[in-house]
Length: 407
Image (cartoon, rainbow, N blue to C red; front, side):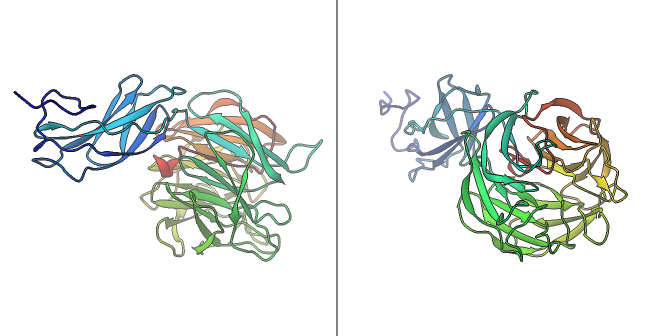
């Protein structure tokens, strides 16, 4: 007769000398129709090595498995609250369940569009923050407000937190943050690396899953090549990372989980640039040349999947805006290749992405626009209309909780 299992055990066949002990539950984190469930392996693995760990959801009983922590559980229903229990399996069978995790509610990946300049009248900088659900076309919804009206900010994000930095307003070297899951106004995060005038605008941000970088911009007296970084989960001032290969303002950026790329921009007293630079996000140091965009432009919007970066729109030195989208393979240096076209020529636009879709919002196109376009990042072709921002504006920035650094 086999011994009876302890409470919470998932099998009638239990041998306390050979079955593993239960893992210790950690934190569950919601994703888009998914959750990541962290745990600590048991000290006692039983009579053989643990071959797999599994997590089961309550409700619905959806199971995910992995060789180590965390476990990804997919196929969940967005908007439904779930808890999870984890168990271990070796050749003798499964362990008991762990305790239940915290409750999480999966949600569609959100894109955030913040700051900008309104059309005249009334004109002026705005503190607006809009959000969209990237997988679902439609108009943007009000999210909350920045601490003050500003323009030409830079943004980056983790899976839970979006950062908005700098801007062309006095004393705007401030970094602010939002929590994607909860609409509301921004909270102070810290400050960028100090510049001559105390503010930085026209910079661009990129990120890994844990670290955010901000590079380029201007303090209205000098173009900047400064790159600084923060740990997104920990508030505090930015730290010097290194330098871009060129000083430039109104630059764009994108990222993979390991590499950040800055592209284009404008050099006062000179011209627009086509140059792209890259860094390894985990290693401080100066940027290295990556290649060139298809055109020398500024005011471009950049976004990415985990492998491919897209740069769309921008303004040529001659003064005309373009609708061209170019793409790069982020792991391989080289020049950008034509991807397709936006629905309209525009510059001073901004872009964000999910692992599969890139979205551009706002910009200047013979007037300030509220248009949002999207593409499927892995499929070459022209953009499609997505919807509208809550307000027409240019010189805005964007980020999402599902961008390339998190895929």
